[in-house]
Length: 185
Ligand SMILES: Cc1cc2nc3c(=O)[nH]c(=O)nc-3n(C[C@H](O)[C@H](O)[C@H](O)COP(=O)(O)O)c2cc1C
Image (cartoon, rainbow, N blue to C red):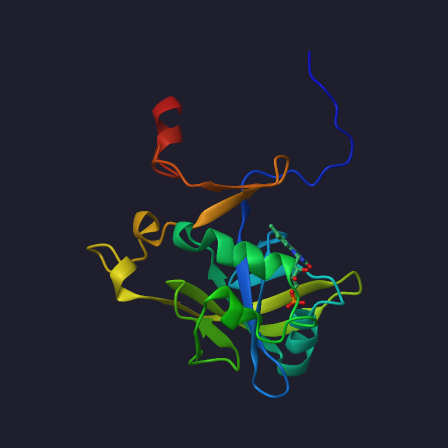
């Protein structure tokens, strides 16, 4: 027997994306977004509510960064998802994060999160989906493998379980993509 749950946005896994923006005075903000992912080639899509400070900042600066929440900063990243800069202007500082300006867009990089995408706004659809071009991906050298590529075991990003409203860690590698299926061809 299977149990029906009706309409649920339960997709496994969902990411824990941290969107970094500047306001009109150059004050950094960041928020937590799980409703987002890869779109087309070199683009990202995120469902954003209109009332977030982040949404206003993105409209203003036409730019944002996307960092990946990590195991070391679970509480701080959750805080970014439950408190708005509309109410707490020093939100990032209160969370314990520091920032530096991104090299290719007018948006902040969160220094404590080791990997970020720098994004330029392409459009906001009428139902509030932000679509942006990824103009750069930047990672701390500390989280690169011997080939010089980002190593997920060193980055230690977390994922969001929407049914349980929980954050989870990513497990062990279980196979090579585009390769494992050949064994049953
Ligand atoms: C796990 C989690 C996922 C979230 N995902 C989204 C999302 O995808 N889109 C969205 O608009 N808000 C999402 N939120 C809510 C925002 O992060 C939250 O409202 C935040 O306070 C907005 O901050 P700001 O007003 O400073 O931009 C999420 C919150 C949490 C805790």
